[in-house]
Length: 63
Image (tube, rainbow, N blue to C red):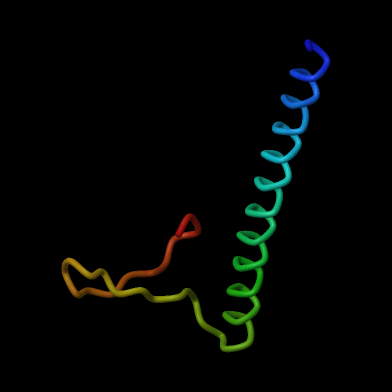
């Protein structure tokens, strides 16, 4: 029984690590694609509109 619980915990941890790896890879891919697009157009940053104030600001890396 202890072996079964250990295997279940290991499989769960492996699944969690896999999902985290995939999400980090997607985030880095988006950041790279955005940087490439900015290089092609010569832009300094990407502007996003703040829905509360209606003002535009430069998009941060964590968004």
